[in-house]
Image 1 (cartoon, helix red, strand yellow):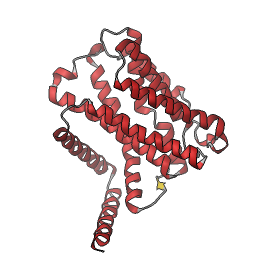
Image 2 (spheres, one colour):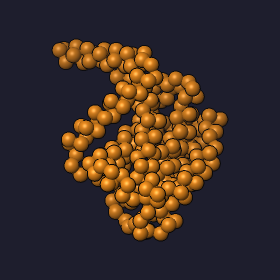
Image 3 (tube, rainbow, N blue to C red):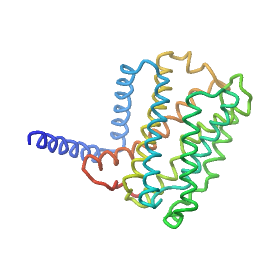
Image 4 (cartoon, one colour):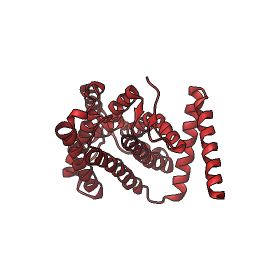
Amino acid sequence: MGKKRGSSANTLFANRLFEWVQSQSKMVKILLALTAMISSLAALKSCVTNYNNFFIAREFVHAVGITALIYKLTTLKTCSGLSLQTQELTAIVLAARISCSVDIGFDIHTALDITAFVSTAWVIYMMRNKLYVSYNEHLDKTPKSYLLIPCAILAMFIHPDSSIPLFAQIRWAFGVYLEAIVVLPQLWMMHKTQMIEPYTALYVFALGVARFFGAAYWILRVYESTETYLFLLGRGYFWVPMVIVSEMIQTFILADFCYYYLKSVVSGNLLVRVPRV
């Protein structure tokens, strides 16, 4: 009885907190997001000693999101609300990273990328062949070239400067830059529909958490090594700073959706509401 009353009080407090945040100006919201991010980084720094574990955590969280999609496609037999463009772009990112493993070497990250690629390819197959009738194609019209071409051009000029072949360096950089914006078609699609069902919402939320772990790795590595690590590698000394920028771009792109997702979960709503843009 006391537990239920306490849980209700916590939910009420959380709802009021979300309402207060929503009533603030855009600048205040940005400052609050930065404060939350810095606090989270400080907590991770005190708890995690091997920062390479952030990559494992990132892939694990991404796997949780993919599992939610697989459950939706196999159980509910629908791909409504899911962006095929984002899935295909994700497959391109993973393929670029896997292809670089021939020059860099295979490790646990390669195995995780292969698993994610196979899962993503299966989702694409289901959307294109088995469940295409439920695909909202008219809401998913983002031309992939608008995202692919700028990333390819940027990768040719700013990429890691290492012992691996130049083309592999460019492919790796291309994957990093594209991954930062790969979720945009999905977000634009969701803002058009405004109502997102639970499994698609969980998938996008998992992407946001995964990106935060990726950003945390680079930010903490640079923080501990000061400018030495910041300008350690890269054509024109810009590679590591660009990686950090890329990681943070997707983190902030997804921050808004993660806010609405958490608000819906705390409120006990199955559907996530996002504002139209």
